[in-house]
Length: 108
Image (cartoon, rainbow, N blue to C red):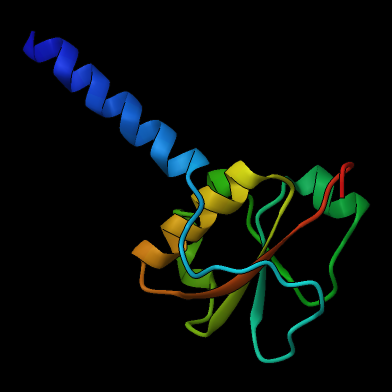
C-alpha cells in the first residue's frame, strides 16, 4: 500500500513538472533587449535555427551549467512545451526571474 502511494506521488510529480504550465511566464513574440535569452533546445535544433545573442544550454545540461547564466531577467527559447515548463521551473527554483518564453519548432 505504501509503495503504491509513493509510486503514485512520484508519477504525479513527474507529470506536473513537465506538463503543467508555469504561472506568470507569458509568451513573447519579439526580441526583448533587457533580458538574457536562454536557448533550451538541443544543439542540433539550435544550430539549424540560431538566435543571435542567446546562451545555448539544452535542458539536459541546465543543472550542470546553471552558473553560466547571468542573474538577470530571462526569456526561454524552447522547441516544445515540455522543455519550456521544465526549464522555467528549474530556473525559478534556482532564483532566476523568468520573464517569458518563445517556442520555435516545425509547428510554429
